[in-house]
Length: 140
Image 1 (cartoon, rainbow, N blue to C red):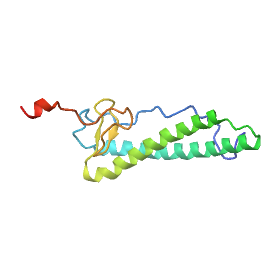
Image 2: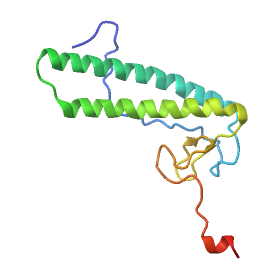
Image 3: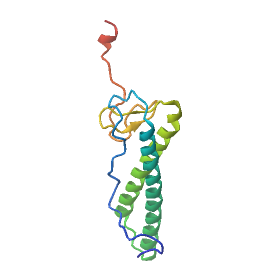
Image 4: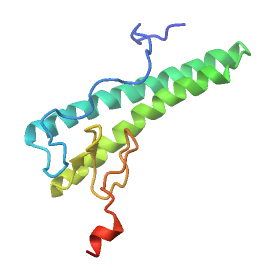
């Protein structure tokens, strides 16, 4: 069923476009440049639209299943996962943009995804942000 005013584009899954500006150094030492901030703001706007669309679609899907008395939990969980992925990326980008005023954001050394100050693990790949140093090298 199509909803009035909705695009005919189908959900194809989680967003797979790059989430980080390409010019950020891999070591995470420098703050994003003005063009990178603009890229993050553009990405934030895209994600806001995507999250709203996914919420609308998920609600419509639940409604359609309910009126047909055919609730398929597997389909709902899959769509909710897409929504959760887009929403978590949106939240991280918004957090980075808020922290940009203090120039404390960096990027993951493994995948290049942006992260905020105080992050222990990368939100995208799950790798530790901080390097582990062997205890014997600390005391030598």
